[in-house]
Image (spheres, one colour):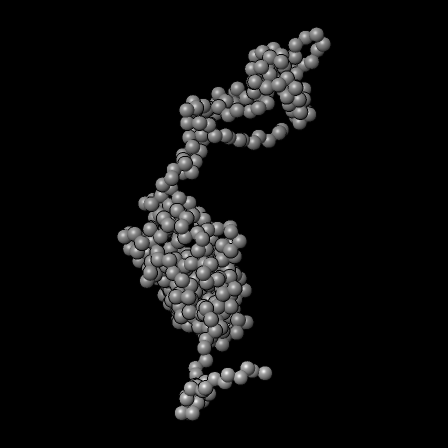
Length: 398
């Protein structure tokens, strides 16, 4: 049994819609049957005799059966196999015509977006975030902006942006991260002032997701180091895994002391589910994911969630539409309904990275001047004799 593949084409608006699905081979067989010859089929289909004959022979080889009966002195006619193919196709078309017509209508509705100048599509690769999911629903329902979001680690999202696989990327950093931080080491090589621009989006709280009632009385990362608490982590390349490693380094806690450090889940929701199912006692994540699964939450840090694009993309209609959605009157209130979220201070504004990422420096820091150094650079006071104009000699120089 050969497998079937479906194809469709675009027709002008004036074309009459049909519930039939065309097939080139069956069109050839039907034309041969109607005209009684290959030359007649060629005329019906406005094709050359050579093309029709060649296609019929190719399909015979492909299907392993004769399609036509070739007898000397007689017109070509369909073989039994050819007749059965036509019969099967007509039976299928008769039974499935309503479903085919419904499928055609669904496809037309889907493609209508492409022909509507008021609708925009924005491809966004981003670190997993509940606010982005809410923004996607709001933008599509109220503003005809469709966010094509693919959730992945922050590092992978920025690489995708730089490789041209998306228009915008989402990543998050701890507020006021200092020079030399793990965030700087990770993100700085992927971002360039002047080339990338940040659009203000949100602030969110990250902390420990724990079982309802916090039965182990967990309040800090240090308590995870006793080897008794079962921890569930995020995968390498994610911003939350980076955050955990940063916090552990600041508190001088060895990763090897965290039971379950190598046990990873792909999203905040998956971490919360593992805890809710009793597979782990704690995990680092966002408050919204914890509350959604009936868990308690211990806040640890506040982060800025950034949306970043190339400067050259700022004038694209989809990016402009996103900024209008973020600056609109409805979005801040919707964002505040998510536990642990606040709108960014400059929501929807295009910002320079140096204003938000504290570790970005355009130049090296200048060393403070000492008095000795300033004195050495200060010009020496001229004596009265030195200030007196000198008479120029009329003798030519040697």
